[in-house]
Length: 118
Image (tube, rainbow, N blue to C red; front, side):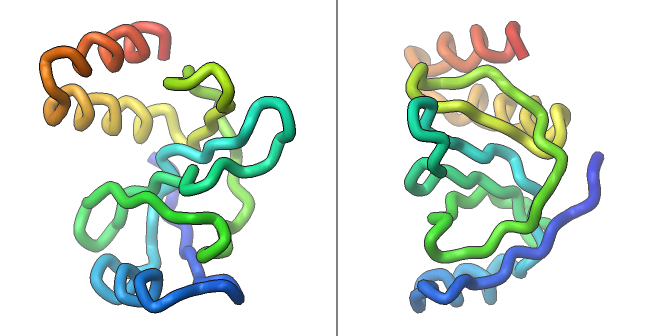
């Protein structure tokens, strides 16, 4: 797997961002980085990271954190209006396995289809 990245609060951070970083640390693996297809702007709350300290998947708002540059790998999308990238294909596969375990019966079918194309 790739090395972790350190996320830092941006100038627009709030108290919730600081509490989350104290609880889970600042070292994360980027699981999904989402952008709007038409405008190439980051999607709101479109950053999913896996914490190195606790192993928990967390959503971040790009307005609240500064994300360093990383090598992007294209991955299949859940929504046709969004383009998704990851830092490692293995991280994305682990995330899909996590979603398949926690999703309801109806939701599992969608994630299984995406896993086949990943």
